Length: 346
Image (cartoon, rainbow, N blue to C red; front, side, top):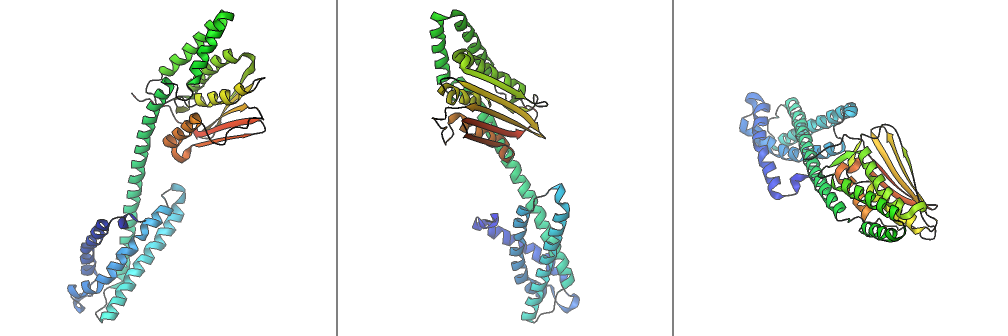
């Protein structure tokens, strides 16, 4: 629905605003001594009322024809055609009004030109309004992204993604302490290193991908001590990806999900495969793991993956893609997002 029709007061203000436009157009288009200013105004009043509503159509044209450098030729044709039709409509309405009232005709060629200009002015106002709305939406999305980044820190602090990770790790340490003190000590060190690095992120909204990968590796180091030979990790990191900025703690839920719902459910264990590649101005990240064919992966996303998808939507909107699916004993989560410079919020 057009914004003017959303509230009655807007429609009233819009129509009142046309009053000075009517006065100026009537004064400019009167036929010299053949008609008075008052006569021309009376003739144009119904025509301008209908034309005022016709100008609202420019809003829908703006919505389906956004400004883009590659579309200048099409835009020029669209707006030239639309504005000329609007000018012809105004002069046609004025001619009809003058004929019905048997009043002198106003200057129809001038009316056509004025109608064309008015329609283009409305298009400019609508484009400005659309741009302002997009800017406000981007600011709101950025503010929400900052809020979600802070939530992510609490998410990590409280282990909201998977609270069992810390408990399982501590239980593994306790079990190893009596049978393999060296491994127990090593697991404590790796767990401490992972937690320290997570907390050190502070309020950084995004970090270089190389740092996020290092954090994911620290998590997997802890899990490898817990699962031993049952967990195998492979990586394939393409060139030109390291300095791409991504939201902090974005990958940890993915690898944690792969271990929890994949390797942990298989007696013989399995492989977690991490791949990162550049695709033009985007970076593609995929985490893949095997799972027990007798235990199909759930149709719905868990808390961790839902959190990741929501963060991508808030930060990047339609520029990011989240895709998760399982088939043939393998579950794959793929992220496609713009490769941007890391930002830091102090």
